[in-house]
Length: 113
Image (tube, rainbow, N blue to C red; front, side, top):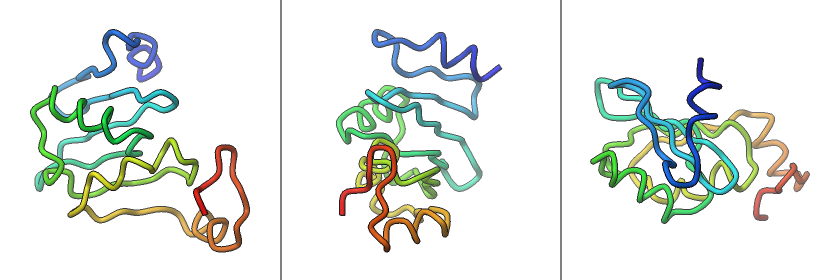
């Protein structure tokens, strides 16, 4: 079902609300998700460009401070760079990704070291 929504989004319509709890937005290289929770929102990946992520938030009437948690699926730059927008959010990334970063092992698009 999510694949259908990802297919539906294009450059002219880069953000789409699946239901009242889940919003998808596309950045140049990644799709990110905002999930409504009791305390605000959870972001699954933050996107590459701060401007694109900020625009998606604005279109959906969400303030950056309403995003309480950001889960970075992996350390490629297109998944985490816009996380700087979420200054008050707790940011989570897996231990293997942290190990890769600490040991300067590049991923596909590489974490900026």
